[in-house]
Amino acid sequence: MVTISLCMIVKNEALTLAECLESVKGIADEIIIVDTGSTDKTKEIAQRYTDKIYDFEWIDDFAAARNFSFSKATKEYILWLDADDRIHDKDRTAFLQLKQTLAPDVDVVMMPYQTGLDASGRPALTYYRERLLRREAGFLWQEPVHEYIQPSGKIIHAPINVTHCKINHGLSRRNLEIYQKQLNDGKKLSPRSVLYFGMELYYHREYAEAAARLQQFLDEGQGWVEDNIKACFYLGKIYGLLGDFEKSIQSFITAFRYDLPRAEHCCEIGYLYKTRRDYHRALFWFDMAARLKRPENNWGFYFNDYWGYIPYIELSVIHYWLGNLDVAIEYNERAAAIKPADKAVLYNRKFYEDEKIRRLTVKGLDVADEMDIIK
Image (cartoon, rainbow, N blue to C red; front, side):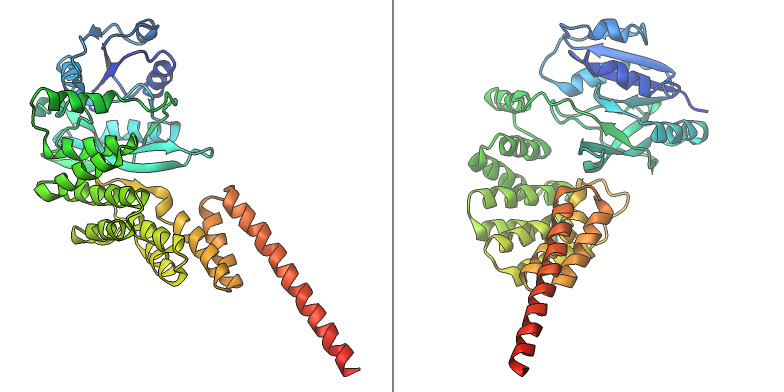
């Protein structure tokens, strides 16, 4: 059985830290907490679980803080989490089994990261992260914001979910300001940082500058395939918001240069045609999205609703508009199989039931009229 150090950086996490640490009981043999300036009871809560608590002066660099936390680890493997991450019971059981069976020559264990939970607990976004790392391999975090570790060596994938249970604090400009400070200090952003700077600008509705940065990232041609696909997606979204139909369509389609079509891009193209009431073209793109098979063990970002639910619910609505009630009902039930309590699914189901009754009633009246004529 391997041993594991949990390494965390925290600041003012009194509302979430205890639940996080409870979720890793039995998994972590050592807990390292690095505090970057808490003014609440974060440290007091951490002391219930570990005496390995360190202060780190915040220097606008997440990678530096995480590398400091890694430097304090002493066990064979390092697990990292944020304070609002959880390992739920099912995944905790699987993690404990992995701990018993993990080969000591494995360098990196990639695990799914689930974020944006809806009311039923279904994640909006899922992607793999480098979650468990062999300490002696000497992995280091890179980038001051949206930090990451470049996986290398022997890498395996484990279907053990880490779930991000963020308490909504509103949209912070912190990341955006870190990027802007780098630029003001005359530092050149890495290609990856250009991408994430563009995304931060998009989140803050600074669309023109966001588009420029994302296009810069693509033009430089140094991005990882999945990042290129992501940039095309956000460029398409931005141009759609700016009302530039042609550039929006082109941005989504450009993603097909890098890999097979993704459901996210196909659905967004479908939306663009739907808004123009070009229902046959919209139908084509939503149908393509519905037929695509989601890649397995791929490190890209996947918005889960695009892979099943959105194509089905949109195909249902469009088929109704095109006069295909039975097909519309069929697709709505496919959407229901994915999200049975969804408001749109329930609304459609009731609407279609009423529509069938209305059509039968109208048909009955027509028959009665014909009988009157015969008489």
